[in-house]
Figure 1 (tube, helix red, strand yellow):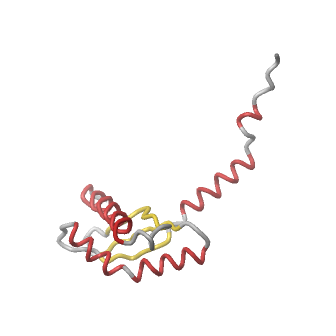
Figure 2: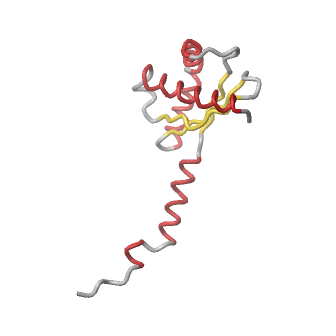
Figure 3: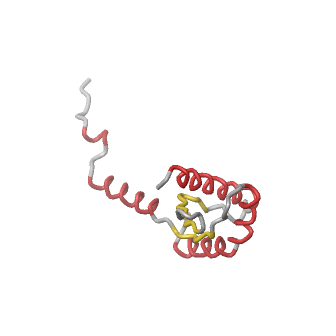
Length: 122
């Protein structure tokens, strides 16, 4: 991936997050933009989203985000000057959930750091 594409990815991620925070504050409370991957021709982009909550809440927030894709893209076009403003595909990012699950499993297997130390003698 080129350096320019990486910069565009980061810029779009930052600006979509800002748009959600500023314009859709109450509706986008549990939504976090975790990653953006723009195609090399800048025509399409995948926006990975993490949503806090149960699966039903995640599906509802993703549906809301897809319904508001056009106004978000228009506002992004006002903020960023690109030859082509990519079309966005919003996808759920489950990496945060997997990481949390993995940490829980590690906590179950590994003893707590304090348990590994012998008791102090006085």
